[in-house]
Image 1 (cartoon, rainbow, N blue to C red):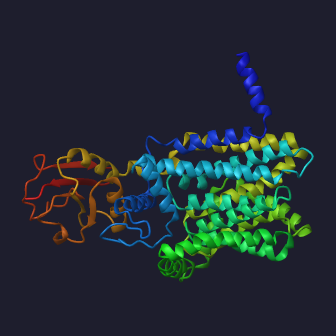
Image 2 (spheres, one colour):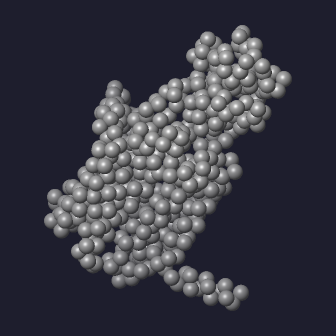
Amino acid sequence: MEKLRIFLSHFFKNTRSTPFVILFSLTLLLAFTDLQDFRPNMDSMTYGILAKNILKTGDWTTLHYTKQAYWEFYQHPPFGIWFLAVVFKLLGTSNLALKFASALIMIGTTLLTGAWGFVLFKNQTHAPQRESATAALLSGLILLTSTRYLKPAAGYLLDSPLALLLVAAGLSFHLSLDESGSRWRHRGLSFLSGFLGALSLLCKGLPALVLPALIFTIGIVSPKTRKSALGFILGCSVPLFGFMKFGHGDVFIREYWSQSVSARVGGNVSFSNHLQPVLSLLKTWIPWFPIWLVSLSFLFKRLWKQPTDVRVLLPVGLSLGILLGFSLNGRFLEHYLVPFFPFAALSISLVWTSWLATYSERIAKATAALTALALGAALFLPMEFQGDTHRSPLVRLHERAQTECKMISLSTRLIYAPQTLDLWYGLALGAWATPWEPTVAFSEADIPREETILLVRKSEKPKPAHWNGTVLLQEGEFLLETNDARLSALCRAAN
């Protein structure tokens, strides 16, 4: 017991490492809380299929979805898919590997957000070590108690690696402005910032443009930052040039930026659609949204007195820029805001850490109460964040089919009968959850006659008239009952 007491005493005295150990432990716990029931949602399965097909085809330059739809896939830039393919190469293709990839990104984003919070107060106050540790812990805790950050981060969505890369790029640029250190260190960090910023652009669209736009603006208004801004531009050029030269960059510009992104930003949508990001935060980012607004008012006063304070400009500009960017998008989804939360957490931490030094007891108690409530919800209601994909009748049907129909060779085609489900969901679920090639039949005539197949259909529908081959397992038919539907699967061997 005495040794344990000495260890704990030393651990909590080491204020530099303590917040990061706490944040790492909490993130690890939150990332794997729902492991037993984890099933990826449709977007996660889509990215998993793309990564799986990279390893299957050996083609890293053109992404492939399924043979029925998007065999050449240019709907998203490829970097987030490449990262997932590397994880699959090391761990195999499975739900666990997909969960590990998302957990790795969650941990990296939380720790880097904490690290940025730490350097915000370095050399700024009379007690930099204590306040830096407070800012690091507070930034990470606000991020981990933001439910709409946790929900998509629990599965693999491209918004999560985008957030990680933006935080890493912003932190690198912030460090490049530190007056201490060698000239080569400054140049290296600014180049790294640009390199990471370009990778974020190759991960997912509009939010990645906020960082270069902000750094370009800072370089214009602040002469001290121009060398770092130039290093950022040079760093951006390397991956972008490689992508244009070897990665079908011209096709992505045409297919993704010119068509997909412009369609989302443009289009005939009502004004209320553009308010959805703010309304979503108002409803779901509890208790932090009003605190963020109050914090912004104090930070704007600082910027009014010192417009070139990069320490304030970067987190404030990135959080507002990302929110504004998605307000322009007339087709908003909640997971789009994942990159917003790290920078909003840093903005709050900038103000609250200063308040803690002045009104430490009251603010500390309020902070502890708020974070304890939000963390308690995250730990004890994990399915609130992951959703109920694990209860999907089709997921269970596929799992059972692979056991019941194991006699069918792996060349089996998975056919979804007409009116069973929509095309995109069927292809995503079938291609990810089974080793078979999925196809959606638009009519009974599209159901193959002479192939080994697994047919998924509504139970009340009659068996296809031409179903006359050798049927496995004494007709091989079984039912899966759900709350509001009955589904069945028919295993059939070729003649």
